[in-house]
Amino acid sequence: MVTPTGRERKMGDDEIIVSKTNLKGHITYANDVFLKIADYTIEEAMDQPHSLVRHPDMPRCVFKLLWDYIQDGKEIFAYVVNLAKNGDHYWVFAHVTPSFDKKGNVVGYHSNRRKPTQSAVDAISGVYKTLITEENKHKNRKDGMQAGFNLLVKILEEKGITYDELVLSL
Image (cartoon, rainbow, N blue to C red; front, top):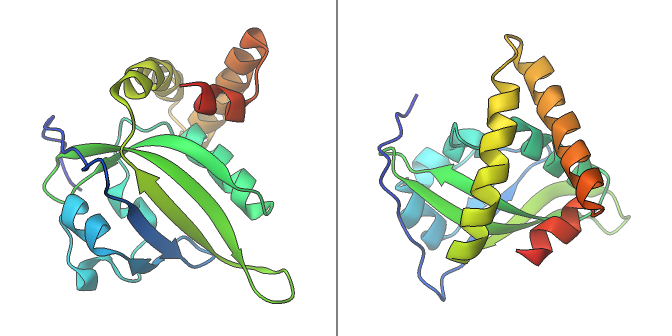
């Protein structure tokens, strides 16, 4: 388990992180930018769960939403805080899509990540802290994730917007 350092790494304005996974979320491709910012070698990253870079401050319920979207064959955009191998963190604006075979079956997932704006990170950080607080109120991680998801749905309903509208408005 990697311990967060509290130090932030920043992507370059023109950098794009690219990774691909199989249906179980195990890395099948990682570009040089991914490897550099996450501080892994290709050998360390290949065939590992993409959660290899999951930061503990990232709400599990957002990943539930992400998986719900992509397993349903839809794309999703999300702000994500990730964890490098040495414990530094880095924020990304992720676009995750299913990959399809010629028959239209989902065969894996593809993600491109760009540098987010600081204003978007500032805005989403508050939402994520609220969701993490809710998730952590529950001893059972699955119950916590569901409680966080329910709270996210409530927040969106109160604002009268969808998740996509929230993310794309930041």
